[in-house]
Length: 242
Image (cartoon, rainbow, N blue to C red; front, side, top):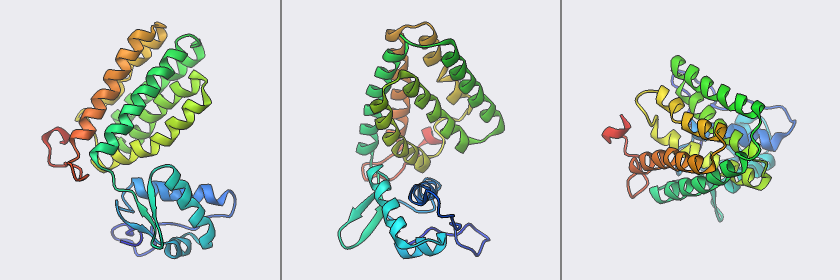
């Protein structure tokens, strides 16, 4: 497939025209959203000319945006053929979650020594927001806000390089989850799984946070990896994914 499929019932292009400000980053974000929502399937070619036409821009910023996505692990470049949406397999996702476990354990260890009441309040509000999204049934937004909670921990930890690596992994994490669908039958369970992390931070107990973080991310890791077969296809028929 060379370009995103227009939504059912619509005759126009999937992507809409952009202004010229901060063009490359904005194109990269539009392409990222299209990939995560399934507009571009794994293995699909990102055709510069078609994307440029749909967005109302020249091909040069599209090419630069594709290179940004390559750096973020969402697309791969093939010599003389162009850019293609990356195809994940269970090995990729297992390694992504393994690195996330290491990063977030360390972020928590840094944060317990510097957590302020304001930080704790913001984290608590984020968990409450996850519960509100569960009530609303907004699964896609819940995934975004779930990852935002973890990013907040990395931000509050104060290590900019750690945060940079976390951000690089986030796109890959979102892509993996997007290909699978929801991880839990009860949407409130997503919010509840963050409560032990918050409790450990408030208690300023690095050991308890490490254990809670390993369990939290490790459980997601097991579920996500189990839903992928050895050839990289999501196991949508697996009872655990229903």
